[in-house]
Length: 603
Image (cartoon, rainbow, N blue to C red; front, side, top):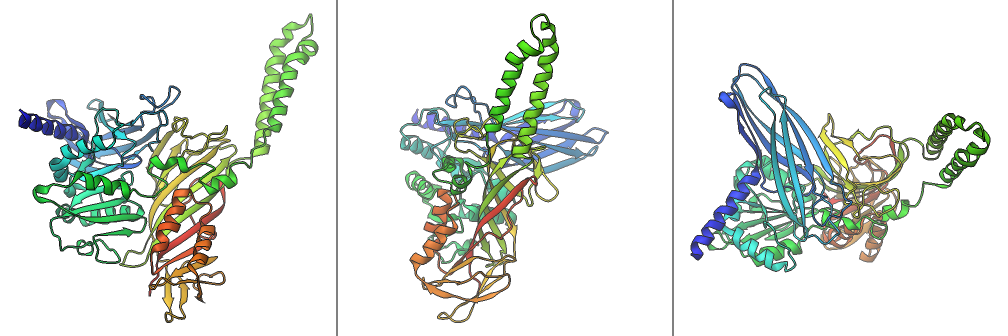
């Protein structure tokens, strides 16, 4: 009986996961064709993008276009989110054509709404992705995918073979590990097929960890491996299980400084773990590893509470300036006097009360015009703000890439349009700020019921909706991977190093830790292409300089920079306010960009 129960549970679990992967699978009547929409992962990410494959078969005699409209929502009205909460929505649309008598396949990256942590005691967040298919002339269709995210647990992906062998033990352990878990369906991880993984880093950005075997890793395409390694450098945790006790990470094509079983890679982490007989893994050790190496990052959203005046230096320095309500109060008081006693006793005095039907609307219109004029004069059009960014530059191993984490805060006046296109293909998320009359997105309002739309622009990400609202305080977080030729080159001997800047902007402070752990610094600003002799400094002096350069970062980003990245020997830190950043809305005057560049020094 126990064996039969175990088998039935396993079949139920695999059936559920399979249902999660299929968003829509429909065969039209009279053999007119088929459409199949499949998620490559069985779980929804907590932000970013979901890789989706669309297969269309057109057996008719006419060329047709299928319009796919996706709505990603965060279930803000579900139990535990608060009675006044509105769900946040991310929308996207795709027009997919298929000629008569042909079959086509498309790979999509579907934007997913950022999940904000709830503050009302619920343990789960319900994420959903709804699909509407129209325009083919064969009838409208609907599809759906849902996922219940446990807020105390990371967002994890696991290869199908590992999941099928270990899901039961992992789920049992994680439910007992979190004794306060309130029930409902819970999975340790979403599943994926290694042979069918996306070749774009944005597809993995909403997941904290990816777990797979050595054979899984080697069976993925080169493009998929490269995308996972880019995600790993941005902060993801890659865990590879192997039965070969002699193999190391470099032999798997994962570039690390030493041939070890575990190492930090830029902002992320990679670990090589032993695989037990029977394809089994130890639930306790894996859970502990994922928890202990959780990325120190402004996202995932479980860490979003750090965006307030206590922990975000940029917000603390800028939040109080800009808006002066005194003039608005004066206008409202004058309006009240005009529309009340003056209107009643002067404009429409006794015997002429009928004039109120004319004077009251005129006073209201006039007050509205004055109010708009005051707002425009006081706040102007567009807005102003500042940005901070932490950039890892890899000029080693043939990468030549920059891994960018950017935080920005702005105050807006009158925004004629909230639409914009980023200067490069980036992932952008709204940030929950400290509650105030001007903060549109907070933890308390569960994101404020924002409606967003993302699509592919000519040069970057095309964004529409509530990203930039009028008369607001707004924060955003962006991540991107970009090609670069920037680098810091080391010349001279170990006792008299000379640093050469390959960046196309001046550097205010340049720090360098050599292979022996000795710290060096430029004693003046470093111009583009310049070579400067370095002077030896103490570790304490280096830490003071780096803390000053990161004082406007959030707490988690400061900890990542000062506590983790400073430990790497042979690496540099370049602090500047002259570097370019990822551009968003052109109506915002980004007055300063505070940047910290880091990476290995090239000999």
